[in-house]
Length: 263
Image (cartoon, rainbow, N blue to C red):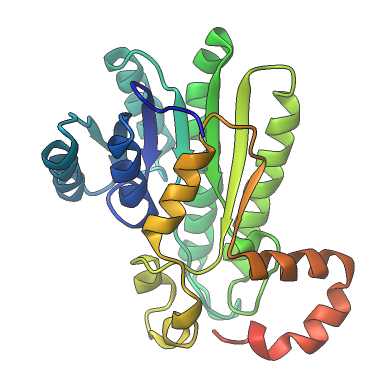
């Protein structure tokens, strides 16, 4: 576990959930979290909490990663106001669980714009400076859905498959550098993600006992910073299921069908 003292860690989607928990965790370890999200009010609250708890001034920027022009403008501003982007955590994302026949075109395009294109655009903004200084860490928040697709999450799972493909390819491109690339593949986490993804609340209720706590996920991510960690897969039993699925997809779909249809 490397020291984060004095490092600048950019976190998208930092107004709540994993992003907020991670911002608080890295501040506790002496880093300066650089906060980005759509809600300026919530960012102000997170920055105030960091200041009160850890006496660190966390800069914050309003950013909707669905708008690529705003990504370019915001990151250019950030990189003139902080010494360096030591870590980028691409955390912004959302999902909408529904049958493909009922899913709106706006939600389909929105998930790809936020979860995939926005993530790639943010990465491209910091990568030149990381290459120039030959150091840095890019952490992409994917999902176990990127390894096992389930009913009612077809497009969401497709975006997370894309994130994993992009992450794995970029890791190989950067093999001869000191830039680390890590994917984080969690199962369900107890956050406001499900307010949009599962507006009925039925799925959340069914999987409540399996949900990860955001503080635990944040600690695991912070522990991995500046280490050669390829993937963080949580929880362990779900990762074992995904490995079995890669080898025996038909068998897993047949016997795990009931578990997959929790949505």
